[in-house]
Length: 263
Ligand code: PEP
Image 1 (tube, rainbow, N blue to C red):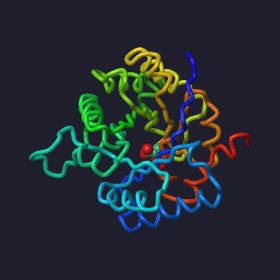
Image 2 (cartoon, protein in one colour; image 1 turned 120 degrees about the horizontal axis):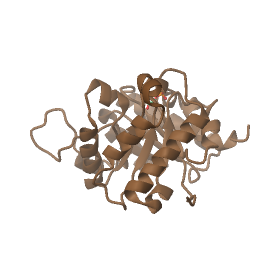
Image 3 (tube, rainbow, N blue to C red; image 1 turned 45 degrees about the vertical axis):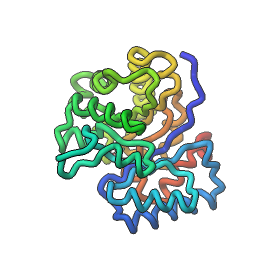
Image 4 (cartoon, rainbow, N blue to C red; image 1 turned 180 degrees about the horizontal axis):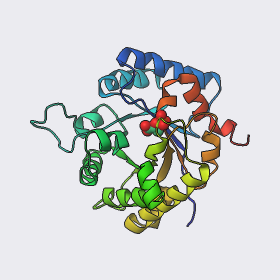
């Protein structure tokens, strides 16, 4: 398959961390750390995914100071509006200039019983409101033992892409559940093998053009010490980073992976 030029994406999933005041201080620090290091923001896209309550404050800061970070949410409702207490519509996120929304993170699949059908409905809701879904897939340790690494992520992605048009702008994140927050990342080869299989799913469902342009991220215990090894792999186009995205210096070092890719 022809390799398209895909701009790497480094995405920070803050989960339920940092209130809106801390978020503003953090984004300013991250921005200045990258500026001091003369990071070229066009070569690597940076995105932050704060909690809902922070998004307006972060949007205002990014806008006022022209900070070259994309903004994303960690979830959205399948509904547009109405009597759904506690839910947040994709329409509201779009109004806040959010570009991305994480869908199907393993913590939502596990703690909020999000099925493949719910994930697929959320992907459609995101696209309807002009948001780019960051579709998370990944196997548990038990899945890995029973089915190998690719089977579960492949079937999760097939389900998530049902009914999605070939022209849709999506991002896929391969996050082995056993690697999330465990300090035990997948090997670069494991990540490459599954990301290649996921690109095959995109090719089969959405076509070769979509497969060539869609970014596939690896996530699970990514840090500055291992990011370069993942980014050397041809089918890994970036990272979804949890814990390490909460430390501005560490996250900046991950974003600057090009500086240590040859190490
Ligand atoms: C995540 O939860 O998306 C994640 C990758 O977490 P961590 O980087 O902490 O493993």
